Image 1 (cartoon, rainbow, N blue to C red):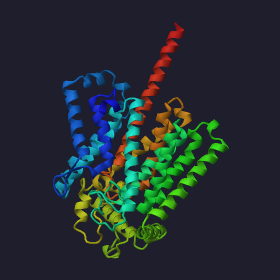
Image 2: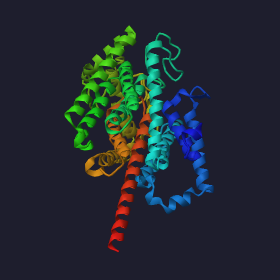
Image 3: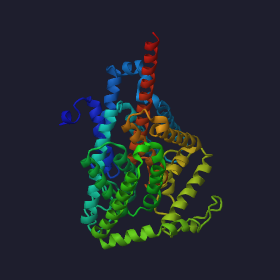
Image 4: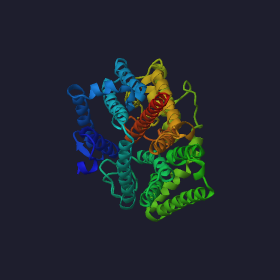
Length: 479
């Protein structure tokens, strides 16, 4: 079967494709070793792949091959990200020296190390446009399975063991393969830009376009079923705003006709109408009421943020005690986290130690930061945070240059499509990263980050090859 799917791929590359499929499924498939540790298929394939890479470099010819052609490899084009990942991890190890809990720090570093390796594996293995396209087809298949199971879950109340609603036959919560609904919602907002852009940027067959369109409708339905406010009203609209604003700079003018724009608007409105109608038909009355209350409370959520002081020095935990409101809870977590940061002289309290310190507090139930950006800042300090954000924005800029006609017109269409979709997803994640309890092990984000790195690497490689061919042609013509 593997030979049929990947006739020209090496064994490690096949294992890489299997690993990313399992990584998106997450904790669903695995072996429960202890109450706190699940040996997932993703971790098994990750370890096998890591061992295979080490063996290939030690006993194989991979190192000598890369050394000879280093500048023409995708990973060389994003080498500063690899350097930063090593620095980030090394800083985390160093921070264990002053971390309140070394055990929490080691566990966090284990997760961080896996995710950093996952991200950098994309430019290492995706060396051609064909391999990138193969990877995208695999991710589409896995994502579709996640979405269609979410639909089944919303109707039958059958939850997977990975869900926090598992075992409760009356619980209408929709989580699919994830632990909670916010993780599913964030995964959807990350994936939707890829589905949307594929339909108007790529030259796909009609049946493929219909499959993507239907999957998109079910994705919107699943997003509504989660009741995630940050993703529904902020993260997804932000990503869509990037798509709409970028279309004139990414799509050739001859395609931007009134007819095509009209068809796109009709398709979008129809998808929203069908998805909302499905939620009315298939969701239980309890689920619809819960979603209605959550989504309707969005503006009161924002108003609740101003109920208490924003001054860290004047923060009084008693102002938050007993409210159990998401807005005030998150505000307390952020302000309290900034207090931790200040107490650490802005060097960070150590990897994973936010959760350790928050467990000593009885003010709110949540112990994780629920904000990826603040989590990095508090755990690792200002230096790592500034470098992380600088490289993040640099990646966005490089993706934009690759996607736009002005800078990247010569790039392969599949590469330009991937760059535009990834750009939108990563910008949407500015808000989406505030939904999961922690993104250190949230694989959909790290997969998207890795895709961005691979695309930049492939785009730069294509550009250098074109420049080299141009120079050779000029040299030949001069002779």
